Length: 177
Ligand code: ADP
Image (cartoon, rainbow, N blue to C red; front, side, top):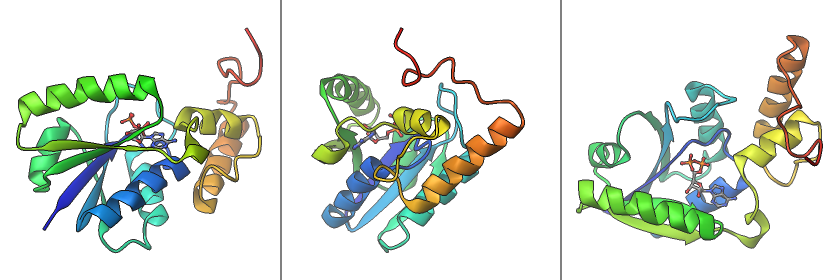
């Protein structure tokens, strides 16, 4: 049985992530989506929320499961008995990053391989950061995320606006400078 781990922050899961996850599900018997608990970046959604949104997005694929993890990705891979880590590549910057992390992971766990899948051209520039920026500025992001993720984003930003926690000053899409 071939098992793969697709790790990431998924804050939140968008169509680019879903494309990679579902293509991996056609290549492997089982795919474990591993939602990283505490990345060194500012998050919009809690770990439970990110797991729930990912589960809902992938519920139609019976060989995909979603878990959360902390610590080393290779330890998570071993815990779930996977042979391959899957990641998505959008551009040269992703390639450089994945190459470096892949090297470190291979030193730590030579028995776990890395498979990078090129992203679908439609999502070549899509990132969770861009998605959140457009959502925070009330733009149209209907082609970038499933409906339940769009609703979760709307609810988050509506709540943030009510409690005055929304700031547009650090977005790149509201000004040029
Ligand atoms: P991380 O913090 O681990 O990079 P992300 O949630 O940003 O977490 O991304 C998880 C994985 O999904 C990474 O392999 C990333 O390259 C890939 N990915 C991100 N955006 C896209 C996209 N638009 N199309 C395909 N893969 C993507």
